[in-house]
Image 1 (tube, rainbow, N blue to C red):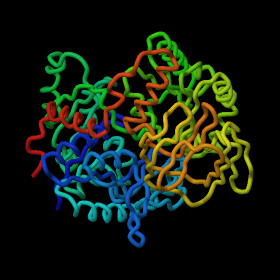
Image 2: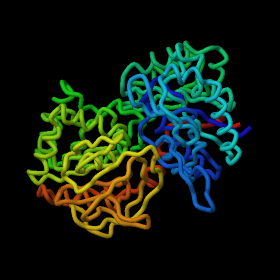
Image 3: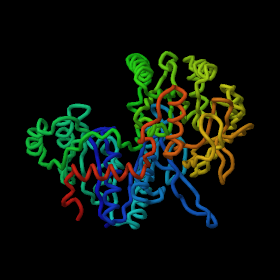
Image 4: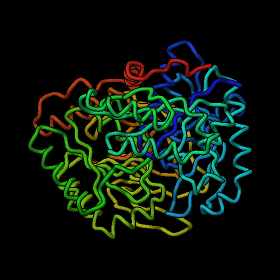
Length: 499
C-alpha cells in the first residue's frame, strides 16, 4: 500500500488544511510523487478538478477548494478522486451531494448517513485509484475524530486512517486557547485501536516566547502517550484557502461593532478598506483570501447596512442560492447599500452569484426575479452546472487596466447574457460586464494572479491618495507554498513519519 500521512485536528478551523498543504509541498520538493486526499469535505468552497476526457478534451467535476490547493502544492492537476465526496450545505440540515465530482442531488443529514455503504465504496475506490499514482498520500481529516456521536458513520477520520494504514498527526490551535485540554481530551476519547495510529501532536499557531510554553509539553506527552512533534509559530502572512466560513464575521451585534471599528481604523491608518457582503450561503469566499493577507489592505465582512459603512471597494461574493441570498439582502436593506455605494462612486464588484445579483433579472423555475439592476445582465438558472478552468486577460475599464493575465475557474448554475463591455476576454469568449465603477465576473480566483492583485491594490490606494502598494501584493501562490514548507520543516519533527 502507498505510504500515507494523515492530518487530523481537535476541531474545525485548527489549521489542518494549512499543515496538509505544507506537507504536500515539503515532500514534493524531496522528490516524491505526492497526492492529497480528503474522503469527505463539507464546504461551499469548490474548485474544478479533472473528471476525464471526451474525445481528447478534458472534462471537469468539482472538489473542495482545499484539495485543489493541495494538488497545486504537489504540482499536480486537481483530480476528482482527491475528494470523492463533497457536501455543499444549502440549509442547516441539508446539502447538495457531489460524488466523484458530479452533483447527485440534495439530501438531509439523515438521508445521507443512511447511505454510508454507498459512500464508503466511492471513497475507497477513489483512494485506490489516486494512491496508485503516488509515492505518498497526504490525507486530511475533517472536524475532530473524537465526535463520538458520529463515529459509527465515520468516513473521513479514523476509518480512513485505518483503511490507508496512515500515520496520524493530531493538530491543536493554541491561538484559540485550551490547546492542552483539547489535545488531551481528543486522545482520551479515541478507541485504543485509533490511538495506535497517532504518530504525533502538533501545537499550531503559537505566538510568543516558546520558553513559556515548553514546560507544558513533556507533561502532555506523558498524559497522552503521544510525542509532541513540534510547535508551529503563527504565520498569518502565509495564507492557504480555507474550507470553513466560521471566522468571516459580519453577523451584527459585536461583529458589527468590530466591522465598523475595522473600517474606521482602515480609513485613518492608511489602509485600503474592502467590504464583502456576508451572504447566508456565501460560497468560494476564498476569492478574497489573497487580498485579506496583503499588507495595507483590510478585508471585512458585513451583514447589515451599518457594517458596510464607506469602503474603498464593495464586493458581492459567490452564493450557493442566488435568489434566496438576494431576497435576504433586500430584507436587510443591503440592496440600498449597494446602490448607495455605486452612487457615491465606490467601486463595486460581483463575483459569480454576486455578479448575477448585480444584473437586471434572475429567471428561476420560470419565475422572473428583479435583480439589483446595476449591470446589463440577465441570468437564467439551469439544472446543468458550468465547471471549468478559465483564463484570459482584463479588457480595461472599471479600475483595472487592460491586458492583465487572469486565470481561475467557473462553478455556477445559470446562463448569463450580458451586453456592453466585458471585464475579461479569453479563449472561451468574453466574461463579465462593466458599467462605470460597477463590474461583475464569473471568474473565481480573479485576484490570485499577482499582476491583477497588485493593480487593484494600486488603483484603490491611488483613489484614496495613498502611496504605492507594498511588494507582498505581487507574491505568487507558488512562493507562498515554498515559504509554508520551509516554515513547517523548521518547526516540525518529521523523522520516522514515513515507513
